[in-house]
Amino acid sequence: AAQNTGTPISEVADSIQELAQAGFTDLDDLNRTASALAKIPLAATFGEIKPVVEGLIAIFGQFNKGLDDTANILDLINKFSADFAVESRDIFEAVKRGGAAFSEAGGSLEEFVALLSILRSSTRESAERLGTFFKSGIAQLLSQRSQSQLRLLGVTAKDTIGQITQLSEIFATGGLGEIEKIDIAQSLVGINQYSRLLALLRELADPVIGQRVRRSLESASGSFDESTKKRLDDVGNSF
Image (spheres, helix red, strand yellow):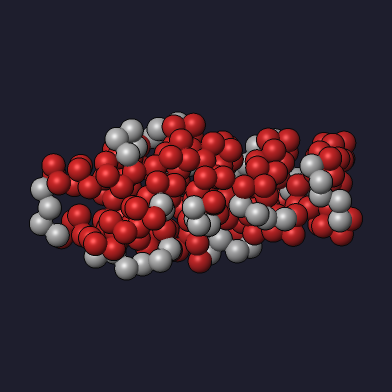
């Protein structure tokens, strides 16, 4: 695969060794992963192989994923990086900062990437700051106390995006004053993170944003291979 893509074989070999040292030793999975990693430089949404491998290892550990999930992870990140103002390195950095707390609180990788992409696009804050929001703010939102408060507000959804979307609808149509909204947001995620929750709620109140997120999630599968194949075809046609 490395020869077909023009990626130096040594880079792929070094990455596979790093994965093996991290405890991933199944040869079939490593071979499939090597084929995917060789195509990383061809995708406009990714950069060099090494930081992608480091990001993948973080996702594997924090969201209980394995090497056999590599293709799905690359598809997801590729799609959201293409559709929103977020870069793959932002996603990886935010995962390192806040992925574990978000996952432990019951959030999925798909929810993490979608919510991060919305926030990064709207606030332009750094991945480090937004990662901290997931570490403390969203994790607190998923706590039993905040979950009880959400139910009292009329939120019935079980998944994180569904809950935040319903809360955004309540904020938009429930006749709440701005001070009330601030008080509720502070109670749900804490005084240091409430402004980011409010930004997220404003974005999700826009049906267009919700449609974009659903469209990206639904069309993520296979997007990485499509992107790299197009790049290979473009390179081939240039000669």
